[in-house]
Image (cartoon, rainbow, N blue to C red; front, side, top):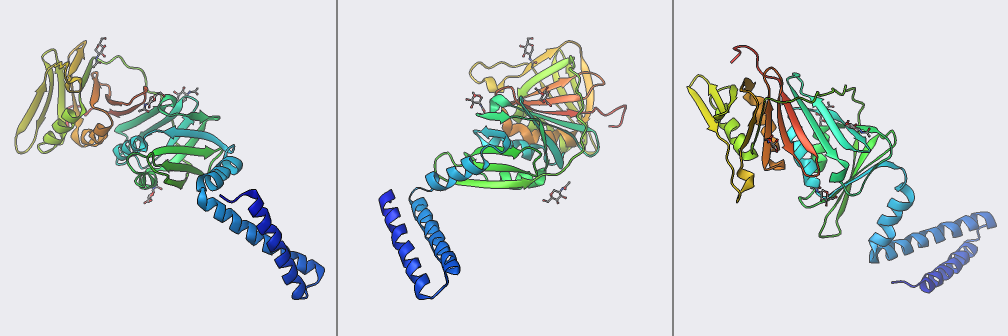
Length: 332
Ligand SMILES: *[C@@H]1O[C@H](CO)[C@@H](O)[C@H](O)[C@H]1NC(C)=O
Ligand SMILES: *[C@@H]1O[C@H](CO)[C@@H](O)[C@H](O)[C@H]1NC(C)=O
Ligand SMILES: *[C@@H]1O[C@H](CO)[C@@H](O)[C@H](O)[C@H]1NC(C)=O
Ligand SMILES: *[C@@H]1O[C@H](CO)[C@@H](O)[C@H](O)[C@H]1NC(C)=O
């Protein structure tokens, strides 16, 4: 480390050197002063850079963040796993191209319909999923998900993500910190104005709710896609049956309630108040299953003539939900 004494010695020395140089060059007092001033400024810069090199965090990062930018942000949300947001974006990106991230005191919410208005995505990242979380004012961050995905791909799997935005922001700032090294990367994503109505989703008492391993649901949807474009989901007290009928033939997978204390991830739990049978587009279900990596279990909620709810629960009461309108009549 350079002691303050050394630094002031360097300053005094250079001051006289530049003073002498100004004199020998025969500059008049005012230009001479400027010459001296520029000279010392260069030296200050060099000292700063040299000192910073020995301890960049202390001299560079903190002053920049704390003194000049610290209090401008109305949103600051630190997510232990940047990967979580990356998985969410990967899961919804093919359904929704751009959307508002609505931030308020209770967390960050996103709600958007797909272009054909058949499916709805609803994400809630509760403030408890972040530590710390601060949102002083309600703000909407209109983000192009392609751009967000590009930036999130720059993160390493263990990185910590901090989201920051100013009041009435033009950009959202994302900082990735590596948990095991001193690597810090910082990105700004330009925001856009998105006119999006927030739909009130009614709280529904579903006739059937099925919790099952998300990998199982993904396999069923993928397998049946090979045969048909749609699947009939039928829930009775016997179990839940996924059936399809296509050009090459037909197929059906039936699951029954299953409890394994050793491996609770593999449990299948069916709650039924009345039998339900509905038909859905497999293309959308396969798309929803991209969220399988977010949660070991998925919950399907069905009622006749109501959109299907597919829910991936995240820790701390956060969630990613998909709603899908049933196919009507014999469209199949
Ligand atoms: C924050 O936003 C969510 C989702 O939009 C909403 O349900 C909640 O009521 C809001 N909370 C506050 C305190 O405004
Ligand atoms: C949930 O909240 C707790 C307490 O803030 C935190 O320790 C934990 O990391 C959070 N879980 C996730 C996945 O964010
Ligand atoms: C989002 O960004 C991509 C490229 O980054 C662009 O092709 C696409 O048109 C943008 N979408 C919207 C809705 O602006
Ligand atoms: C089924 O009902 C029980 C009791 O109400 C509840 O604890 C459980 O979470 C429900 N399961 C599903 C899959 O909704």
